[in-house]
Length: 409
Length: 173
Image (tube, rainbow over all chains, first blue to last red; front, side, top):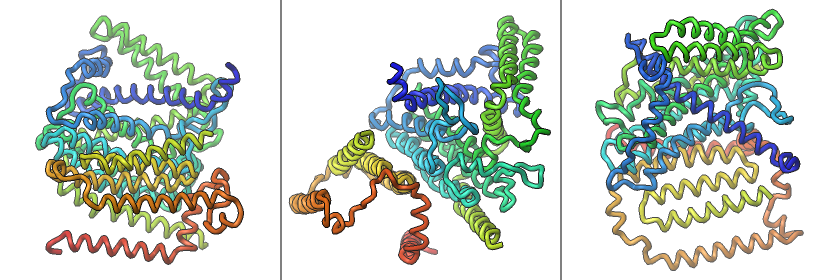
């Protein structure tokens, strides 16, 4: 038994990591829908989900159950195999990318074996990210074709054109990062961003002293919005014109898979954006003893959240809420205590900062959804080809020139 | 051991789906099997430790070119294609030529398998593939130093093709 474990330790630990990450990601996605509905509701002076559980916290669960038990019809004349294949393709490709994200520095030990804080360590991980992104078109395109229906086909054609056009901008906008750090490995890209600029700002790629990648980041973020089919680029599912675009004919869990794929793509794109431009797991505070107190930020945040939940929960209007919400608060307080432990504290720094950055980008996603109207199709294409691509190309040219000049000196 | 399993898996998948590309009745299935073939070939590159080629194969061929293929096929009227004969009269010539090509490859393989002078004759690599370095940088070095002129010529050719496509596609420029 022991020998068997030793032989397959790498495989087993990888499987364990995959299980943990996928579980966390799927739960995160479920609550991302709750978060989005809540935030957009408050932006529009509404309450959002309130009825299922305290603060509507059980809403994702209710939605999941509903998706599972709905009738799942296949349209007449649909290509059955491809009709089934499309949602699987969408979701699995969207989930795959998270395997390449490094969540923290150093190594943790599981069952006496040290392992890095990411599922896969590949020296061309950035290219693999783009490979997965470029494949994600197929889910949408095949779904639209296999449905044997007019609106889905139109939606999927639009979407394929859109994703192909914006992929160029997406790829071009990160070339500056590759030039600055001289590698395709996401871990090395993060490691190259250590240190400070002018003693205050972290030396992240957006603030890079050679050529701040602000333009690169803006191009990346806009292209990412388009790649994930989010507002203001959600033309593939423009309700007023196309009913629901490529997934009009999908119901039940197959629809849920498309839905989950969209949110998973949001999470992974946010993760990639934070790794490439905002220093990944690196803390925004300089690495010196004076800033050592920031190590207790995660614990402090969790503690404040826990206290708030307990105080508000005891006054909650329903009886169940008066029990559940304070218990949640207690759990958060326990979490805060764990985070403050000297053994745990340094380990969670990396994941904490990366997750905060991801959370920030997700909030921006929702914020944009609550703010901007949808583009028209010709505007979308004109913007992608005539603005985004030239600007990101210019960014590449200027960055490489500045790097060359610096090396000459 | 693992390398061999992966090689036979990807190799078999590539051959099988290549056959299915030709024999499928529906054009979209042909496209899907072509995608599988390309992905399996990418897997073969990976077993040869050519990870850059692997990524580029997926990004360019599968994620770029094949999407356009699928795009066009979706818009074509497939009912017409379904009623047409799938193989034409050239198939015996094609089989013969295929067999000749296969025999050539087999001969090259068998000659290369014997050690000695033949190995140099066929220019087979003498390094075991497991010992190669990460090759993204190596490819860049070779492309932009040793083969910079062929590389630039290829770029200009592509540019010409691009401009030509725009000129032919647009009625008025």
